[in-house]
Image 1 (cartoon, rainbow, N blue to C red):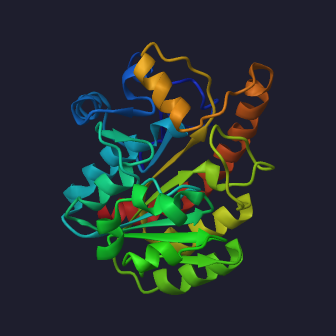
Image 2 (tube, rainbow, N blue to C red):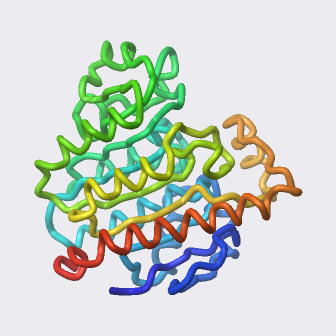
Amino acid sequence: MMRPLVLDFDGSVQELSDTDRFPLQHRQESIRFGCNMAALRALGQEIPAVPPIVFLGSGDYHHVSYLLIERLRVLQRSIQVVVFDNHPDNMRYPFGIHCGSWVWHVSRLPFVKCVHILGITSSDVEGWRVWENHLRALRSGRVRYWCIGRDLRALRRLGASGSQSFDSAGDLLNRFAAESSTWKEPVYLSIDKDVLQPAVVQTNWDQGVMTLEDLEQGIDTIGSLVVASDVTGDVSAYRYSSNWKRVLTWLDRQPEIPASLLNVWQKQHQAVNQRLFLKLGAAASAITEQIL
């Protein structure tokens, strides 16, 4: 199996054993937070063949997952996409694709059967904010939200009957294990560490309630089906040259990262990344070599 790869946009992913690193700092301004589809396609032409495990750096690059998933069309079969994330990432964004809208783009790929987002505690999915979501993907069942402690009555009234909310991460994972046990399709797994409690790691977005053990349990549940995966949610500090992107991130309520804590937080991520690397490597190796 190919060695895991760090797509190094921002230097946030600290050294991991047995990984390769592909420098992309020159793409940081154009890709970070969001970009038009032409810029994303140009990035896709630059990055090399991708191994089964990829580290993307900051959660501001989660839309790069679209490129990695799109490459799985070579399997010539349907796939399931499983995303651990505190946010739906299925929001409306009229300027191309960004870290909060990429799920909708993935759901439109013809070989993707369904995108499951697990661990959502964000208010993006309830009340008046439901109108910010791509509702057609939810109504059709191409996107499903697996939430914790959210009120989904507004979504259900608008036809998103497949999405659910649970009282705890444990209840969610038990239900997900029962459902995913019937799957026959290979799985692409994407992990945004903002799904974790702040006590585990600190990210640059509001965070969920899962423990690292919850996340590892979720990986084990689908491990025999995973053909490729990515990890994001690391932290880095960056000031945009573009006033437009500064405004967009301000509107999205991104907090400033204290300079005095950045190195400490990155070291915490390094430890979590190493555990996820070992877990994902064990999950993906057998089926990846069989299918790819």
